[in-house]
Length: 493
Image (cartoon, rainbow, N blue to C red; front, side, top):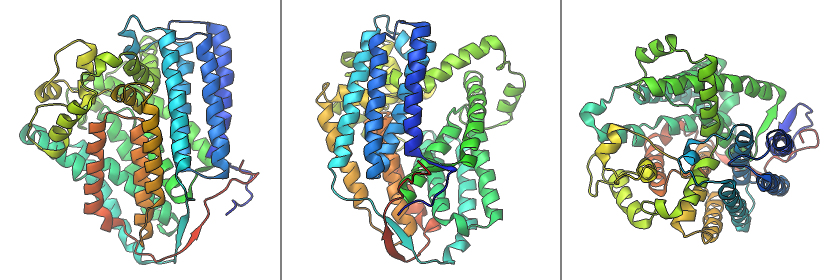
């Protein structure tokens, strides 16, 4: 199926190629202006170019045989890894790497080399899975129109429960957190909502669209007031996943690009606000008037504080830092990144809600005890001072599988992801695309790993949420045809 000729639309594939070329040009300029530093040398610039060449090669292949997994992976690598190399050139600041005085540009280059090879292995695994991704069409039906109100109410309830103290943790303890994550997971319900909108957008009345937009804005604001710095990023990822599952690609017109451009400075401001709240508020995670008072009395837009916030933003948007840190310190982190520790953590954090067998926190919560040379924590230690660190799939698997043997594992797991995606079946159009979206979401979470135990936690949450709420969204439309994925025309690049 060819896209209609539309000179104002741009395929994500084309935009990613342009961004990769642009990053290389800026990287070359930055290197000649700023030169070497403790993290960057001429070989880093060379690896930046290799990353771009690899991305463009994968995108060129993806253009002929549409693959949402490739688009997801290249988007992550382009923004959070290649973009991070640019910020290292501009401002060599990284709390994750600065804590190790022996970390050098050689270590960063070694990590980048492993990442490049890992991406190649993932790409080969995805393409080894045989079959072409097809997309279902359905007979028009008005049955699902009656569900709009229920979907809005469910999203509203999820937002209230997530960002209020309706379930008091001081009374229910870990059970409250368990209920919020497993039985009324706001983020999953938001993803469900986006998939529903993608399928039924033309059938949703303008009034309901406005209400849904209002609730999405409320989610972003509450997310920020709760001290979470990724509200708009979460929306962007979910919108991308919903579009990829339903259309096989993402098409942006000039209006969408303009909105995205406007949202960039807004997201930066919200990042500043959330960062400040995280430092000051004692009730992080819960929205109250306390956060509004903190913002009113803050000085977050002072020049001196802005410098700190800019460095923090560069660090938080750079997934390269945790990957390089874990790869560099493989021996140290192997104390907790191992099968035995993961087994204990999964028993305690996934399968036994509200009580412990081994008193073992998740790996992501325990990492800081390793790099601070402290004793391994108990659950009460984590609850007293909560913190989680990203591992990324590159760092985690490098440690878990003893280095470059992880490349084989990457190939196998990516092959499994694609095979499962190709085998999705359902007579209901919503469930068909929802299952695909959830597989893409798990793939996204896998790449940005917080640990195998955390992923098991998320997968269990997905199964429970689907079981409890799928009937709220099911359209009961009869599937009658399949179609080829959208292919970019010359006008849409």
